[in-house]
Every structure is written in C-alpha cells, then in structure tokens.
Length: 269
Image (cartoon, rainbow, N blue to C red; front, side):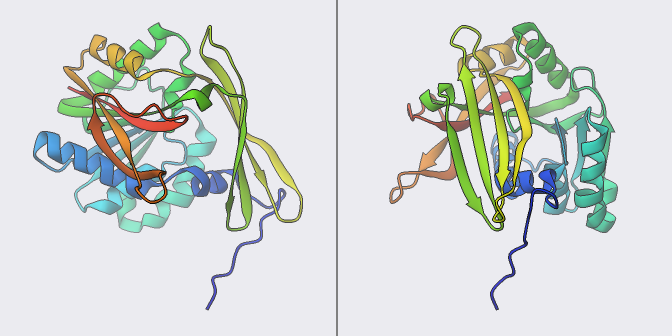
C-alpha cells in the first residue's frame, strides 16, 4: 500500500517539523560521532552535549542508539526547547529520563563534563567576532571530560559566497534555501529558509540566519588557542557513479576544492 503523503499548507505546517525533515539526519550524525570517538579513544562514548540544541533531535537519537547513553541539550530559546521536549523527547518513554534539556547560554554552561560536545547546523556562525567564538571554544573545552572530543560542522566553497536560491522537493512540501549577499570584507551573509506547499501557499522566511562564514584554518587555530591539543578535519567522500557526496566522512589534510562542500572540524582535548 502506498504511503499517504501529509497535506501541508502555510497555515497548518509546523516550521520545526519541516526543518527536521529538510536538513537534519541525526542517525548519520550519531554513527559518525560514535565512529570517530571509538577510533580515537578506543571506547564507546556515553555522554553527549548538543549546543544550540533547538528541537534536541540529536539528543533523542543519541539515547536511542545505546542503552547507557545520556544527553544534554543546551539552548537559549524556551519555545523551541519545549517543542523538542513534546515532539522528540517525551515520546521516547523511559529513554526520556536520559535526556536533559537546559535553557542556558553555551558561552557559560560548564557542567556536566561529557565525552562529546557538538555545535552543529553551523549555529556557531552567529558569533561574528573572533573573541566571542574563542570564548565559546574555551567554554566547550571546559565542558568536556579529560578525553572529550568537540565536533563542529562547516560549509564552504565558492557557492557559499554566492547570492543564490536552491530548492528540494520533499513529501508534501518544497524546501527552499536562499542566500543573500556575501561580504568579502566581513565574511558575513544573511540566509533564509522558506517552505512552499502544493496549494500555492508559502511560509516565507521561516528561519533567518545572520552568519559569519568561518573557514577551516580559522576554526582549527581558534580551537588550539582555546586549549585543544589537536584538531582534525573530516571531509565527505564522492560517489563514483553520481559524483555527488556519499555521506562518508574521512580525516583529510587537504580536501577537494568543490563549489560547495560540508565538512567536520574536530577538537581533541
């Protein structure tokens, strides 16, 4: 039997739900985090802290992945934390007891000490000044256990500097990513996510991002300055048939100069 596609409209759609469907893949994130930590440290990671947690979808997937795992989600936005609690955490049942949502500032939050801490979805790009990003990385360093690992995702390539619009069709709606003008002097760029629906209605500027587009060497230098002993960059491989990204990230010292790319920058304590 064919699966029924939900009928979305601008009036009925929930922007957080659409965002999760459009841009997040927590299962892949958990596999990557677990693989890297296990390879580097020789054991399974047990605790995770998700900074800029939003709907805390990664926290939910983390505690589902192994029975002993525990997660903390930190965010300043009460509304989105409560949405995540209702839609992602409470449905976990008994597993929900191993998720702790914290309304707080990632610049100052210190406890508890965890195995893995992440700043995903490029959320750290809200910090435009070097001194502020360094302050955040120092806070992350203090929040990790003695052999903890910190993970960031990063995007770049020539297209990251272009004024462009891209879209992706998903069941029941279309996801639209729009990039505004990029400043080569400040590396700042404003971007938006819109959602379009089959009935012709649109949810414009469902999300707005005022970012500084940081580079790999900038992030690595700042992590070392914050106290991390070593940094690594993990680059996505290429599918031999489609010549598109294959979703498998390996450590690299160079990377491919593609028009658009996503990678992970990692700090080892």
